[in-house]
Image (cartoon, rainbow, N blue to C red; front, side):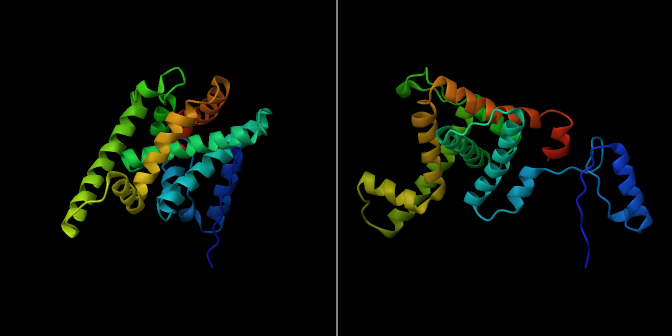
Length: 230
């Protein structure tokens, strides 16, 4: 039986002590040190991705990690909200950003999540004229283009097996039933355009700052090199 241990060291002297233990027990070659300027790093997004089965679980795993860190920091700072509406809105925002990054780029990074969230549609933009600009707009267009290609392929296959096509509404529903990513994209778009924009300025600002504040800290050194680089 091989014993594996994770040791979190607050002081440099603690690290030296554990290195000494490993050397004395003949396990120095098994020692992996994740530290600033070191050889190793731990990308938690890649780790969660590799331990997920299917897109839904990947989103939920990453979202849960981020929410845990956000809420821990709020409790330390005494700023945690017990309002279930605020909690649910934050959960939806995090999930929607992760899903959009996945649909657009096929992977999730801290930088992409930050860019999408900071350029999401605002309330002062008329809904019918809401510009999908910046990183959010770019991600949405990439996801939409992929979805359009899948829709075209779906129609082609349907034509090959049937002489006639259903009515448009029925056809769209058939496509959604057969394409989980299309359902996800529709839900993401609905959240940002119909729900996120409709939030009060104060609530939306708190959600944005709670999420992007964490992401911003993750992009600063030495945290980025230790936990976010690929």
